[in-house]
Image (tube, rainbow, N blue to C red):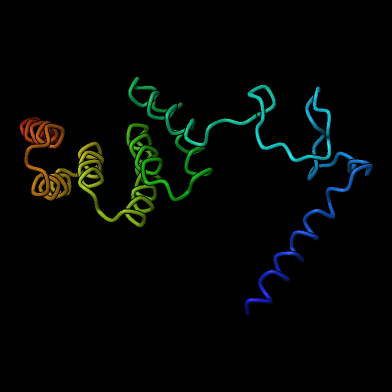
Length: 182
């Protein structure tokens, strides 16, 4: 075993250095091998650092942050588009799914909201935030009994959460103004 290791190491080094022979022409530019940036003398070396001007990408969480920003501004249609983009780019991101569901709630697309909540629950389980959001969704639909159950579950988990307490107060106020058929 002591003789094999040095031989294997020497073999790997020989293979690695074979691609670094001087005087070779650099490979032609292609999709897999982009041309070097201007000012680079040895085009056959691999670049490990790129200048900011050479990098063209958007951070992967930009759609999520923009969705949250527009949601907080109350521009739910634009928020929904950004959250939709976020879940397409990162389908295992529960924050994006929850944001998408909440946006759908405010757009009164409850069928799509239910699907998005289902996806989020599949990723994280029924978190306090999801329970609270589902309660709010049911309250928007006029399903006050279902809303109370979700708020009750969320409250049992976090009794000091002011958002849950406010939603319960809002729900209690809704019971006073129930519309009746005439």
